[in-house]
Image 1 (tube, one colour):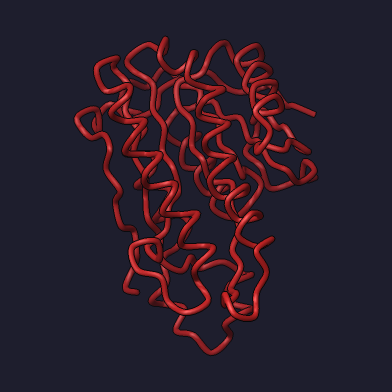
Image 2 (cartoon, rainbow, N blue to C red):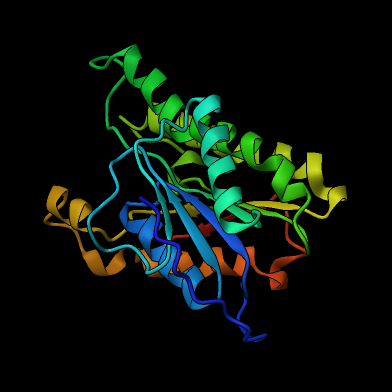
Length: 244
């Protein structure tokens, strides 16, 4: 269920003053960090996720859509339609929906390649295509920020399906930025290394967590890319790797 009691903000110093930002994978650690950072800069946010709507932890006034399969264009288009109707338009899209699997080719399954392609790449393609009409009409120029991965530049053992899907996100970013760059819209990507989340700490308890990048640090870069300050940046894939 959506909560629509947002507070309109008129502070011109806020980077996202009254912009409408849709965030896929919005109920995860990074999605919530981006939502909080965007709200702090004056945005109205909509969170979309395959997971059910959480009982708590989302920003006050956020528009929440759970149970959405963003690999389906029809469901992505329906979600974007609900957001634009509820919030009066769409200014930006942040494609965070994604997941990770470590699996060698020898011991693994081709199903893993299909799964990661669908979750990491196809969701970004479908959501971007669904949002394009609104973003191209957005006042001041629409924005898309995709979440790639530092690992996509060079894949280690067991990283093939994940790195391949994230490399696809980089190529999507480049191609779409060229497609829309003369229409006032920007498309960029950020490339995190290991993100400091409770899940990653549990899976890698012996790692040096201080070297990982915090979700809040990634969120700050994303907010910058969504803002007018980044209007001259498009087609970029920006490493956000902490001290990895």
